Image 1 (cartoon, one colour):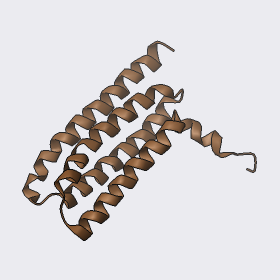
Image 2 (cartoon, helix red, strand yellow):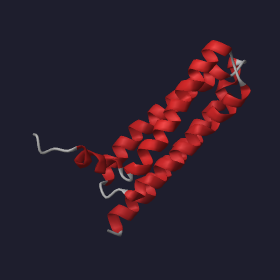
Image 3 (cartoon, helix red, strand yellow):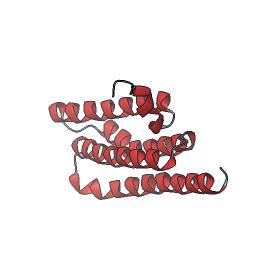
Image 4 (cartoon, one colour):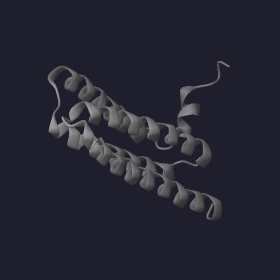
Amino acid sequence: MSNLKLESYLKYLGWYEVFIPAFLFIFLALFFIIKYCKVKGPNSKFATFCFYIPMIGSAILGVLLFYSPYFWSTFAIYTIVFFLLNISSFNALGQSIDDKTGMGVTMFSGLISMSIFFFSGIVRFINFSFFT
């Protein structure tokens, strides 16, 4: 058990030199937005940022999926991160808007981000299955 190193687990994250800092920044920014909006109140600039974060994050995950030789394990980890990202960004968006009836519009953001991520997964699966 002492021979196991952190690098043996990091290989399942794909290109972890990009994955870890990018998503640490995104999750820390969402945490800051939630805390800021609880203290200071809603902010429309943060609401715009939170609307686009799931789409940007799913595009990053989709691109990083192509840099992993371990398709299934990386796809499973990225799917969990994808759902955590959507939940966190919708929570931050809910904190940063005035009118809560507008939350239905965020379904569009989630739908677009889901289609980006899973389309990238399908393309990577085809690439993994037939061309490797």
